[in-house]
Length: 180
Image (cartoon, rainbow, N blue to C red; front, side, top):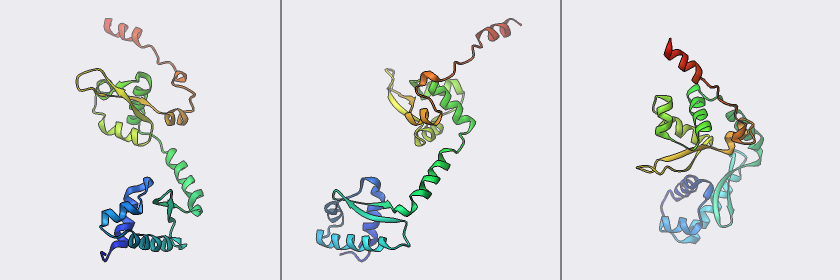
């Protein structure tokens, strides 16, 4: 058995995240007998029982994973509320508004309206769970179509997208500007 197997098992459980990993999978990955892996898992569980750790190793349905201890839950809740209150940049709001009003819409259509590249902004908005892929356009390359999420509706306190305020009609002003 490898000398640093405990660290490897710990790292594998961590990188596998919320999905967890079975003792069988760990044994196969490490080419180690299952009973030896179980000994390491038990040691890790004991290590993380200590009050010096904010997480613990659990086994739910045969899947080993790290979860936060109950003691940090109120603090984590405060963290997430603070994080959700972070303001969106003007560029993010602009992109989000375009998607909300024009959905479903492709990245290229968004960029035509904004006049700048939007790849990074789309990734950031997707990571914040404000937009999502809603399909593919029937066009060459089958580009992704974007729309807003339920999280968007929650944050902006909307029941549906129909509650968005109407956009001002600037067409009359544009015509007047053309003739002056």
